[in-house]
Image (tube, rainbow, N blue to C red; front, side, top):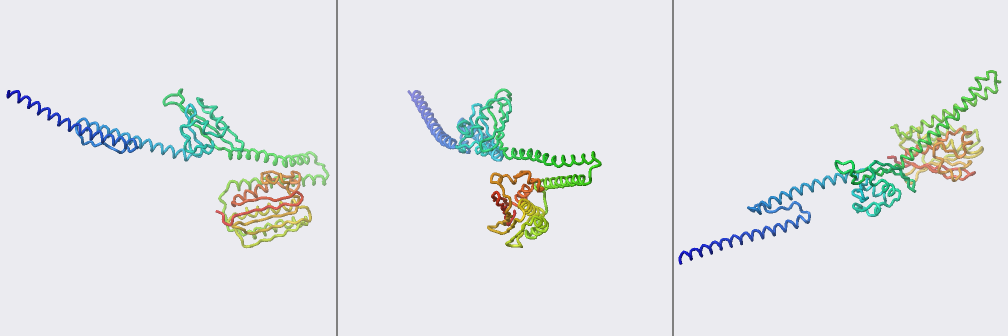
Length: 427
């Protein structure tokens, strides 16, 4: 009987020990699960720095260490991805062109602020994931992109919108890594080339106009020279008349070349030495130069300078050219016995110069064009008075270089008023 009791006692003792061990393990496991649930919730809230207690021994301890290592790796990877995304975003923001990245179905993957403006997006900041048809509200851009979706070639197209804006649309395919056949999307580069196109058109027109303007006097000079060479026995009066025409055309050619060089110099913005220029002193120099021309046409010049000591920081020769062009034009296009008035005053931190005449005037439809190079309201009259067609273009460039503005008020047959405003302080 006694051995049986000993066996029962041993079994009971063993059962109690197992029960105690199971109880302790259950408590440990329960604590671990509670801790794991708590940490997992933090991870769900993007608190990737959270870690399990790795002081636990055994398999749970190994699980904790593996979990912590996994979280550390994940945290480092996410930080690296976020840093690269920040770099990419910064690069996209700094690019002056519009950049748009789409997948093969036309869904937006990446877009920068410049592209948002160009496509007139109405869902600012929420474009990613949406189809281009939902986001792009400029029909020509949308049609241009849709035309080349899925294309394996680099494509480029120039788009001119209704408001005269010109875009250069460049679409490049994006291939799956290490593959030249599987296309996964496209990178779209939208560049505003409006100013470039305008400058190119201006350059082309300028070259054409210069060629024409140079050809006319050269043809005339060449013709009369040939006539003089062939006809050695020409009467002296006719020979002198031909020579006078050659001299006149040579002078015109010289003026034209000088004006072209001056215009080029102003546009190139050479580092000219500026000085404190007294407007009244410069005007008086010009007045002395042109007063005899006015006298020959019996034109009276009146001037009124509110402050004869007013000065601006500028290149003196440019100011002289400004006065000379405006006053000379007023005299040229004013009939005999007319008047030319020059006013100067300062208002609201701006110096205003007015040149007023009672001459032929400028038609309303031409007033916006007279500052263009080689534009003449009356070509025959302009050439007869010795105009090159560059005077007002030069004047406008000079005023622009002084951060000012020039405008005209005129009525046909009644005269014109040219108004120049220049800030008192030029930055």
